[in-house]
Amino acid sequence: MKPIVLHVAAEVSPFHKSGGLGDVLAGLPPALDDEGVDVRIITPRYGGTSKFTSIGGEEGLAPWPVPLRITLAGQPIDVRVYEARTHRGQATTYFVEAEHLSRGNLYGYGDDAYRFAVFGKAAVAIASVLSRSRNVGRVSVLHAHDWHAALALYYAKALASSVQGIPCVFTIHNLAFQGQERASTTPYLDIAWEAFHEVFEDHGTLNLLKGALLIADRITTVSPTYSHEIRTARYGHRMDGLLRWMSHKLRGITNGIDTSVWNPATDKHLPATFDADDLAGKEACRTALRFELGLHPSKAPLLGCVSRLTMQKGIDHLCDVADDFVRRGGQLVVLGEGEEPLEHRLHWLSMSHPGAIAFRRAFDEGLAHRIYAASDLFAMPSRFEPCGLAQMYSMRYGTIPVARATGGLVDTIAPLHNLHEVGGATGILYRSDESDALRQALHWGLAVAHDPAALAAMRSNGMREDFSWQKSARTYVEMYRELGL
Ligand code: ADP
Image (tube, rainbow, N blue to C red):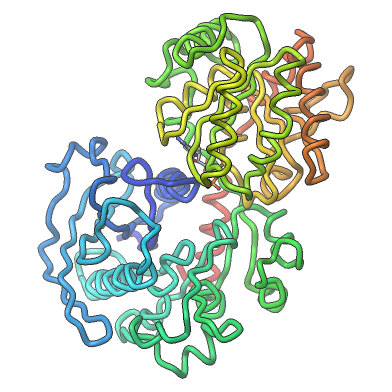
């Protein structure tokens, strides 16, 4: 029987996703399966947001036959677990449905720490059952993702004897989110005061991510450049000192993308498909998207952006330069939702440039695919970017990313240095975190879009790049082996 690596994560696409975390938990498991690992995933079953179409609707979910009893701070909590073969048969996923945890949205509630403590308890209970079962392989590694899964590591080490010795990996998908709470929350999450002082305390507050960094046997983050950046004061979100100290167990492994889902030759969301040898379908996608979003029919270079609308993503800079971009003959389409002031600015830009700027405030997977396919350029003016997937989707769909040189953007985009000598370039990178730098980079983007030879060369370079998960999966497996897989 194959050894089990048990992943614990708040998002798994296509069931529930708010960003890249969900995509990683969609793409990495099949690649690990290919490397001989029995991949099992524990994730919440939320209320209204969970979509189970890809495993045959609700019928695809089988109630787990093992009754689970958990208590949190002395309170018994009702938990139901549903099991399914997922990832086209390459992984098993356990969906945890529990009081408090299973609500309409993934996050954003005042008691999120408590909700994910319930999740952590349930995850460890499932791990304990699996580790005692004779019908499955050995649970060899517990791999937790982001702060929502941090408490699973603590409960595993501190409370549950049957999983205590299992090596733990913690992956940072975004260091900005740390699960920080008032210290007084500590007993309600079943954290011993001793552990609070030794592991979780962060300037008098409770910091769940910090605890996971200390508990884990290995820490990974999602690109080599980000793994260096987070050890600096500028990008370290106050954890840089700790991370420098933890350097011996920290490494950066670049995310891949699920190339079967993100494939312009077969993508069901597109009105026309295409590939690197025949881009006619891309032109059809562009015409259709203009119609869908009410943009003027035109040959203007189209700049796309699909993003959480947050300061992290530099959306304010995009708003600053949108006017200039349109005045120079471009068109802009933005899909996203997030911080209200940014949504308002984008709404106003679309009102004041009808037919040239379109803004859709929504989370819409199909439209996202159509934007990657239809655009010439794709904006990622991120202040920091742990890995970023959108730039890889863009390149795969023949769209040139214009991105700030930070984190995974540096590791995945080969930058253009000279307009007259494209070489192996796949995108445009700029350094300074200022709108003017983005403006300049977009001028380059427009120049490329108007130069058929440069455009074709960069498109072709990007579309032929190998962004599959295979290489990263091998690196993860090497690390699991160091831990005794
Ligand atoms: P992050 O995880 O920081 O949000 P990534 O670039 O790693 O950024 O991943 C973002 C993922 O979320 C991509 O798959 C992107 O297409 C998707 N996404 C973001 N906003 C939306 C939206 N409004 N509608 C559809 N997909 C979105």
